[in-house]
Length: 202
Image 1: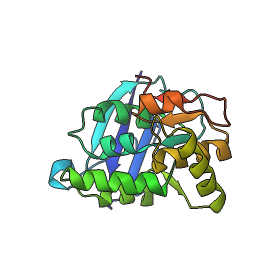
Image 2: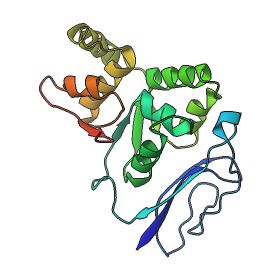
Image 3: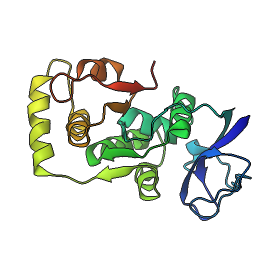
Image 4: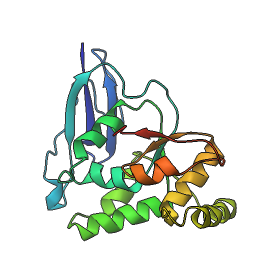
């Protein structure tokens, strides 16, 4: 049986993730139901609101409801339909049962890259403000750990956004990361020896 999964904004312009809508009525955010009522279908390149609707099978991308660490690349790709990996990233987001978590350096970097590409950079902030992802606040402990990680992986290299995610992975105890940076996250280890489970897988 097909399930309709949606990523977009509803009539009240609040971000909605309708991940697994079955034949039963389900309401999320500003009142979306199983009919998936979305009104503002527009070009993200015009700095308007992206609405992506994907009909996929009921098989979930992830079989677990856990935290998924959100990196800069997927955040940009989700919000810019012109990005080559846009479809792959929407599929991952649509199929994930747990929450997305990220850090301020990731959101800052994404806003800058979107703006540099001619897209409204504030979409990165609005995505998080409206429930797309939980932004973990700064802590001295995480920043200190990021310094150590950047020194360790200086030859990869590792930037502050990546370091903040690896440090957050250690805090949360989660190996799942939503990233397009395969080179980096295949090299990085959390808690020194543990490898990451990367989404999308390729």
